[in-house]
Length: 162
Length: 162
Length: 162
Image 1: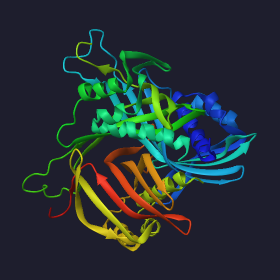
Image 2: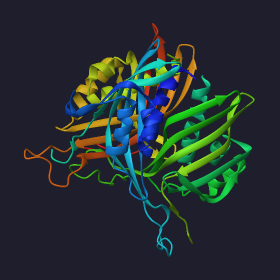
Image 3: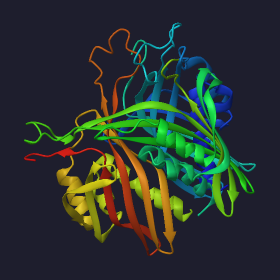
Image 4: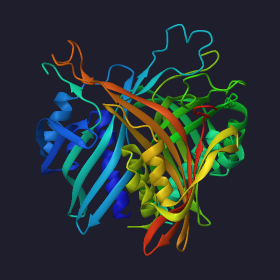
């Protein structure tokens, strides 16, 4: 597999882990010293950090397990990445990708069946977040690991007390 | 062209054929014995099959031509794949990809022109389905063909009588 | 970097330039004689041109700087490409890609903080356009440049006076 595909697959595994709220799988993509920072947009080309950086795979795992809202019954999500721009210099690499997040809410089948006239998929798919992943990787023992990850988000985040 | 790109292009042609309701083009991507199964999500990591499997390129062609709802006037769709995870072992390969389906409904230009104030694209783009494609391929005479295709859909489907 | 990835990155840079309304960056992706044509769908497989073609990188730059609506405060966009089909013949290449455009409108944080109960991203992400990019490229001095670019849009466009 080419390095460029291996690097895209790090993000492909990252988004699957996020969507499954699988902190172990997500944390395993990062080195112990990795620095992860969420930022939100403040102007055409400016961002400000949100909270403190998360450190290392263990920190990522903890954050996924403790701070991400679980999906409700019938709920799921897709973090979709696209338009990767990749630079590789030996065992170091950088990737920038677009990301759009979709929230899925499946309808629950009524015990007496779908109502008359219902046809096709039952539920909603809704884009709720967007931005860029800006990520540095280092190849260690033949495996690309994330050493720095910035989530550049287009919209502000409301957190309790802010 | 790399094998990884060739494999992604099988799905890229699949989605174009689906969106055009082109059963011949879509069927041509499968072997005669290919097994295609639609499944819907029943829990965080569980799915149940919907209906019987479709068998082979001829079965896929028949299904596209007979079971897919035609687009209304001004209607179209985009099945978009992303975040491919690919494994290749000689002439055998596996790919898992995210898929989001968008439904397009173009507005019809009134015979006396667009209303005052109308500006830009006229119509709607709406995400309506999502899930994963999980697909096995076999290279035959230098061409990657689908031998097994599972559509893992996030939401339940209402069909007449269910 | 493989030719196929280099070619995808031309579109990846194109969409970033479009989303930033950066006419200089977008124009730099085209040759001086490049022909750019927007078309809208008139039937299942038919399109009609919208306006005259734009010629060359300078024309693209001018169009971005003069004809694209600027984002409002808190506004941004993502042109997302996917499902690339690529043909390469020496220094000539063709790529066809799906494109979905998302419009982002960030909410503005009230001076006294987010309202009680607000949680998560504040604003909207909305798909507003879709279609295909159909693009010819020529490698000149080792760099892939766009020589012909067609925007095949699914929906009609309302322009003043049409």
